[in-house]
Image (cartoon, rainbow, N blue to C red; front, side, top):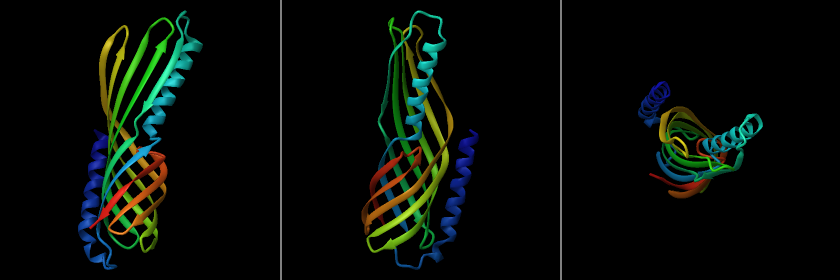
Amino acid sequence: MKAFSQTALILGLIIALSGSANAQQSDGFPKNELQASYGIGTLTEIEVGLGETMASAFADIFSFSPDSVQQVFTSAKGSINLQYARRLSKVIKLGVTASFNPVKSRVEFKQGYYSHDSWYFISLMPRIDFLYLNRGIFSMYSGLAVGATYYIDKNTTSDQGSSTLQGWLFAFQINALGFRVGKDIGGFAEFGFGDQGLINIGISGRF
């Protein structure tokens, strides 16, 4: 709940800043932007994949049981992202992004034991972008988003049946470099690290 409260506070600050910055927008560009995108290589996908692999390796090394790990599977579906942003000046945009990232993993042992997890990560992050190049239909920018992730983990094992865990995690996205091509409607690609992926591509509309 602490992570959720911090996210709500940041959202409130963004709304307040957006309302007080209307007078700053005088360059003729649209003030509002909506984005829809798909990200691959998210932080949660990496954590689940590495976590399952390392846990399985340690189980093999330190277990005194005759059973041992046979296979480890991780299925990464990517992150679906929606964002609203508002321009405060020629170089600064503030907004909020929502993401949904399902991940599945399965560990199988040689004697038939298995553990299957279905993870669902739902993130809400206030975001700031800095535009350092804007030439016609082409723009370049970098950005940072910080917020919270609500996760649901549905676990099924061969000996104990099904159970569900849920809770809150810290969420972030660092966009080292972003490109956008287009005027009112355009496409973009972002390269960074965090809960939206190493590569994030999509479309955006300005109004």
